[in-house]
Image (cartoon, helix red, strand yellow):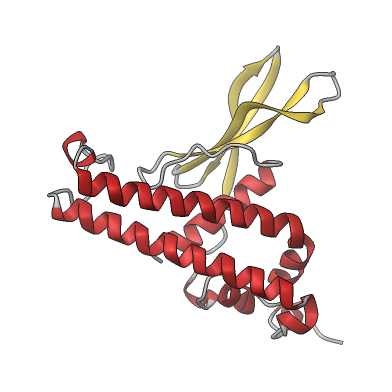
Length: 210
């Protein structure tokens, strides 16, 4: 009988296992993700050409943001990133179970299909800590913060269709990017904290260098 470790490292034929539609959709998401990454690099290059090479508090100076070249590059990145998110959400809705199964069985294959690269150079799983974040209607609430402090998940105030045991309406979590990365969060509307954490992990795997 195979060990758990050998099981999760087996190569999976995604098309045979999950269907041609799954593979085609995954490749489309991967292509859009690649475009977003390229546009992010282009924006950095524009900023550098305008005399902003990063550093400091990580924020882009106003004189750079007012430049037409920067505005055009930023808009292109934002549009691409928004489309990428929408495609990810549609993919998760249509093939959520298949994606999870594929990722658990063959992470390298999953990364290659969805991101176009091997998982060997990807970052390790993010570590989160749960810390108090005030009170909501006399009920203590918490936020989830990455170990490096760059990302936070807090209640967004956007009402969901579900309710707490006390009858109050649940609110959807929001991811806040406190690192100065581009594009910036918040992004609202995640189904739950686990989905928000997965989005942060995906963003770091796709856009931050190892």
